[in-house]
Image 1 (cartoon, one colour):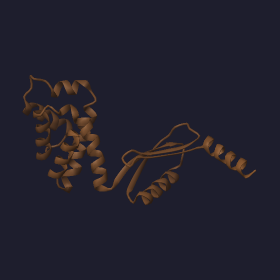
Image 2 (tube, one colour; image 1 turned 135 degrees about the vertical axis):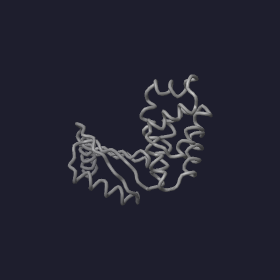
Image 3 (tube, one colour; image 1 turned 90 degrees about the vertical axis):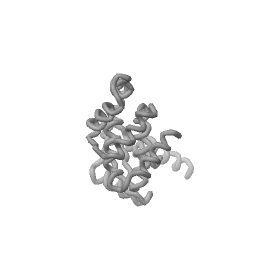
Image 4 (cartoon, helix red, strand yellow; image 1 turned 60 degrees about the vertical axis):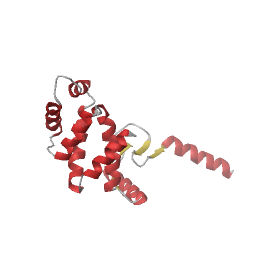
Length: 171
């Protein structure tokens, strides 16, 4: 609940051009925030808030004043440890804002098939969906688009079982 309030306030403060810049900066920080040393650094009582902000600006490679103010608010309110959750919520909000979603396809398929799946899903959800191929050794394919809560799997064993069931029903 708190995370959504922070994300909503941040998005309301940003214009169209700033959304992407600040999103990318927070994405960089979210990657670094996985390291426990990062949290120790930004929670350190030895460093001032201004010193911490300078470190965050350099890590994120972002000088945007709204981003800096957002980081200052997180530090002053001792909410910097919510950075990963803020990123996840911001990712979903930005995806909805631009109507562009990312997903993963697991299995062994060609680039043409990947493109066809992207096109089909994009039409189905009336959105721009970009899929990344994760080559795995499964007999079939699995498609995941987290923000849209889409999970589709077509497995060889399942197709065989469904076919057998249909044959048995016909008899």
